[in-house]
Image (cartoon, rainbow, N blue to C red; front, side, top):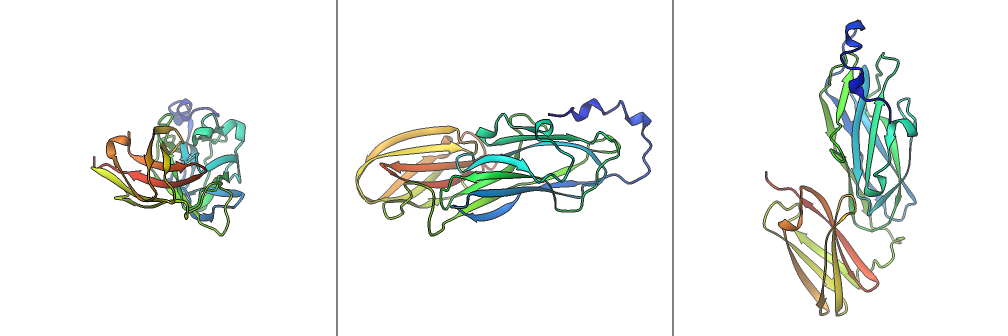
Length: 267
């Protein structure tokens, strides 16, 4: 990772004469896409707007690591190096850290909706699921943008997602809606009370339920014995430790079905 922005604040400001208007209200955009679940690689562009005379920025990006596996980072719209400007320690958990500083001290201006970098993912291929692509405050809150006055600029972060559309074929093993499927989850998003799940299994037997968060960490895992046919499951919101996106997987033998659940408490 490159030098922190704060190293330069206060030290260089007395020596800089500004003869231009600095940036206001920079926006960062994550993509909103839909792709076939059997594609090999998905490219997610991180874009900016009103990026004017910017000398530094830092933030984290997260995704659902149970659906997307980060393969590489590229398509740089700024003078970047992978080893200097990106933190990849938590990429297996679905988090990437980014930090950049303009060492020329002149500031950089980019056209609106210019990609500053792109994330290249291998798709695990679970059909019908949706992965958020969001700006997050974990592992640490480092959202910051500075212009050539070396003052923090107001920045807006617009979260996105990618939907894995159901294609004619899929690379995901064990996906067969005639054998096992989740039909309905409601309410979704949920803010209070219980989440109701209607699902179907063609055969009786032992079923395993797994609830994971956006980084693929297991929140809860349990099992029970069912008969064949239409099934009902209720989950209290206390199962969700914090606001965000979760994935419910129901697995029976060689078959599985997955559904995203969004927990958005009122407060």
